[in-house]
Image (cartoon, rainbow, N blue to C red; front, side, top):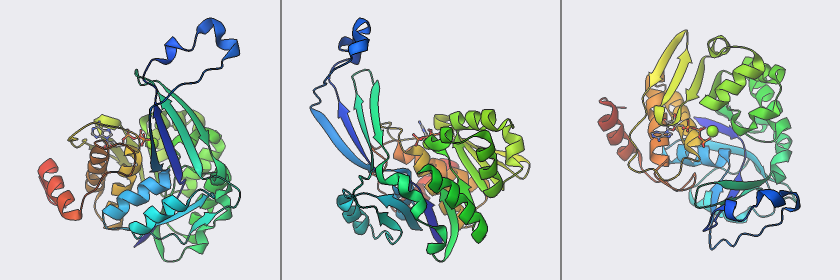
Length: 310
Ligand SMILES: Nc1ncnc2c1ncn2[C@@H]1O[C@H](COP(=O)(O)OP(=O)(O)OP(=O)(O)O)[C@@H](O)[C@H]1O
Ligand SMILES: [Mg+2]
């Protein structure tokens, strides 16, 4: 059951400024903004939506195949993927580019100043869905604009069911384009903010958009998620996190759980609960790929959390 994960591979560099930006960015001097922040703490995380989703799916025992474009600085990430035995045959290196990367500086009040360089990600359309064989489920996660458009069409043409997951890429598309994605897709997954934007841009309510697909999933952070399918709305409670460290990447972990459940033929309430458990585990760790577990542990925790077995 190979799952094709189309989306970004990225590095996230996170730096902590041990003061408040507001002490250094003076409103009356904003026209000549020239500030340097000394950041004694810095860490670099392996990230990108495709990398994050594939990572959690691999932990769950699935068979994810990443389809992405990366730059000359990718070798350390490649080494790491090798350690996990991840299929890399559709990770295409684009010479003379950088892998997509975010540089995030946070201050003591958790304000953030971020620069994002898309780099090789903007070549995503150089990969074609048809190049990957034996795929039974796919996802179009945030990626280069043309890549997302092409991959959605290619999944549809190949008759491979896929999730449209616009994420932070959603603002790149017009209402007409978003409507087309929903028509091509078999499933849609968004968070509550993206759900609002999707409704605004397309001019259609969620219930109407949901009729175009087999399931439309809305994640609601600590409130869990909702799955609209077949005229029904499943309210999925959140699982209890053991710790709350970092919410980034919870959406990706959720999608990994969701697709694992779908590949195993679970019903929507169970897929949603397994997905939510992944989000709750992820939030206890910094970055999108630092959580670890085995299937037995997940099965035990699922039973304890929801009162029935997987
Ligand atoms: N505080 C929390 N407690 C329990 N579960 C959580 C919490 N935050 C997130 N989750 C789980 O993870 C899922 C996805 O989280 P969320 O809706 O925040 O995604 P997101 O906004 O797309 O996140 P991101 O884009 O930063 O990865 C939720 O539906 C929920 O099941
Ligand atoms: Mg998200």
